[in-house]
Length: 134
Image (cartoon, rainbow, N blue to C red; front, side, top):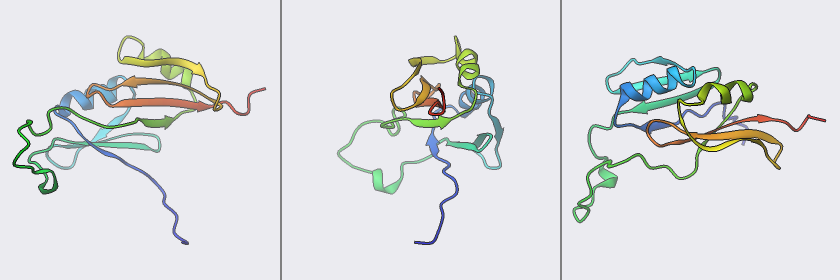
Protein backbone atom coordinates (compact mmCIF):
# COMPACT_ATOMS: atom_id res chain seq x y z
CA UNK A 1 0.00 0.00 0.00
CA UNK A 2 1.26 3.44 -0.86
CA UNK A 3 -0.77 5.39 1.67
CA UNK A 4 0.77 6.81 4.84
CA UNK A 5 -1.17 7.14 8.06
CA UNK A 6 -0.30 10.47 9.63
CA UNK A 7 -1.95 10.79 13.03
CA UNK A 8 -3.93 8.92 15.67
CA UNK A 9 -6.48 10.82 17.75
CA UNK A 10 -8.45 8.56 20.10
CA UNK A 11 -11.98 9.50 21.08
CA UNK A 12 -12.71 8.32 24.62
CA UNK A 13 -15.91 8.41 26.62
CA UNK A 14 -16.18 10.40 29.83
CA UNK A 15 -18.90 10.92 32.41
CA UNK A 16 -17.69 14.45 33.24
CA UNK A 17 -16.45 16.61 30.38
CA UNK A 18 -15.61 19.63 32.57
CA UNK A 19 -13.57 17.57 35.05
CA UNK A 20 -11.73 15.82 32.21
CA UNK A 21 -10.95 19.10 30.44
CA UNK A 22 -9.67 20.59 33.70
CA UNK A 23 -7.44 17.55 34.41
CA UNK A 24 -5.81 17.60 30.98
CA UNK A 25 -5.34 21.38 30.97
CA UNK A 26 -4.19 21.89 34.56
CA UNK A 27 -2.23 18.68 35.21
CA UNK A 28 -0.83 17.84 31.75
CA UNK A 29 -0.68 21.22 30.00
CA UNK A 30 -3.13 20.43 27.19
CA UNK A 31 -5.22 23.09 25.45
CA UNK A 32 -8.87 22.49 24.64
CA UNK A 33 -11.16 23.21 21.77
CA UNK A 34 -14.84 22.38 21.73
CA UNK A 35 -16.93 23.03 18.63
CA UNK A 36 -19.77 20.65 19.47
CA UNK A 37 -21.93 20.04 22.52
CA UNK A 38 -20.78 17.21 24.82
CA UNK A 39 -17.37 17.03 23.07
CA UNK A 40 -13.88 18.38 23.64
CA UNK A 41 -10.64 18.06 21.70
CA UNK A 42 -7.54 18.30 23.88
CA UNK A 43 -4.11 18.83 22.36
CA UNK A 44 -0.49 19.32 23.33
CA UNK A 45 2.06 19.42 20.52
CA UNK A 46 1.24 16.64 18.05
CA UNK A 47 -0.83 14.71 20.61
CA UNK A 48 -4.61 15.01 20.42
CA UNK A 49 -7.12 13.17 22.60
CA UNK A 50 -10.83 13.74 22.19
CA UNK A 51 -13.52 13.09 24.78
CA UNK A 52 -17.24 12.76 24.32
CA UNK A 53 -20.09 12.51 26.78
CA UNK A 54 -22.04 9.54 25.43
CA UNK A 55 -25.72 10.36 25.16
CA UNK A 56 -27.27 7.05 24.22
CA UNK A 57 -26.18 3.48 23.88
CA UNK A 58 -24.84 2.56 20.43
CA UNK A 59 -27.04 0.00 18.66
CA UNK A 60 -24.26 -2.60 18.57
CA UNK A 61 -24.01 -2.55 22.39
CA UNK A 62 -27.70 -3.14 23.12
CA UNK A 63 -28.47 -6.43 24.82
CA UNK A 64 -31.94 -6.92 26.34
CA UNK A 65 -30.45 -9.43 28.82
CA UNK A 66 -27.80 -6.99 30.06
CA UNK A 67 -29.12 -5.07 33.04
CA UNK A 68 -25.88 -3.22 33.73
CA UNK A 69 -26.24 0.53 33.58
CA UNK A 70 -25.06 1.91 30.24
CA UNK A 71 -21.48 3.17 30.53
CA UNK A 72 -21.15 2.36 34.22
CA UNK A 73 -17.43 3.19 34.11
CA UNK A 74 -14.77 3.98 31.52
CA UNK A 75 -13.05 0.80 30.34
CA UNK A 76 -9.95 0.43 28.21
CA UNK A 77 -7.48 -2.41 28.15
CA UNK A 78 -3.90 -1.21 27.95
CA UNK A 79 -2.88 2.42 27.99
CA UNK A 80 -2.14 5.42 25.81
CA UNK A 81 1.64 5.75 25.39
CA UNK A 82 2.64 9.37 24.83
CA UNK A 83 6.19 10.31 23.84
CA UNK A 84 7.82 13.43 25.26
CA UNK A 85 11.25 15.03 25.29
CA UNK A 86 11.12 16.34 28.88
CA UNK A 87 10.04 13.33 30.91
CA UNK A 88 11.57 14.43 34.22
CA UNK A 89 9.90 17.85 33.98
CA UNK A 90 6.53 16.20 33.31
CA UNK A 91 7.07 13.71 36.16
CA UNK A 92 7.61 16.61 38.60
CA UNK A 93 4.53 18.41 37.26
CA UNK A 94 2.13 15.52 37.92
CA UNK A 95 3.28 14.88 41.50
CA UNK A 96 0.32 15.19 43.86
CA UNK A 97 -2.05 15.91 40.96
CA UNK A 98 -2.60 12.43 39.48
CA UNK A 99 -2.82 8.86 40.71
CA UNK A 100 0.50 7.17 39.90
CA UNK A 101 0.51 3.63 38.51
CA UNK A 102 4.26 3.24 37.97
CA UNK A 103 7.01 5.64 39.04
CA UNK A 104 9.52 7.09 36.63
CA UNK A 105 12.39 4.76 35.73
CA UNK A 106 14.75 3.80 32.93
CA UNK A 107 13.35 0.67 31.27
CA UNK A 108 15.08 -2.21 29.49
CA UNK A 109 13.26 -1.22 26.29
CA UNK A 110 15.34 2.02 26.11
CA UNK A 111 12.65 4.34 27.41
CA UNK A 112 12.44 6.42 30.58
CA UNK A 113 8.78 6.44 31.47
CA UNK A 114 6.01 6.49 34.06
CA UNK A 115 2.28 5.78 34.15
CA UNK A 116 -0.60 7.68 35.71
CA UNK A 117 -4.37 7.42 35.69
CA UNK A 118 -6.40 10.36 34.45
CA UNK A 119 -9.55 11.50 36.27
CA UNK A 120 -11.62 8.90 34.38
CA UNK A 121 -9.34 5.99 35.25
CA UNK A 122 -7.70 5.75 31.80
CA UNK A 123 -4.02 4.84 32.02
CA UNK A 124 -1.58 7.27 30.42
CA UNK A 125 2.06 6.30 30.04
CA UNK A 126 4.59 9.03 29.25
CA UNK A 127 8.01 8.12 27.91
CA UNK A 128 11.25 9.56 26.58
CA UNK A 129 13.58 7.67 24.27
CA UNK A 130 16.91 7.08 26.04
CA UNK A 131 18.47 4.78 23.43
CA UNK A 132 21.10 7.39 22.59
CA UNK A 133 22.32 7.73 26.17
CA UNK A 134 25.88 6.63 26.76
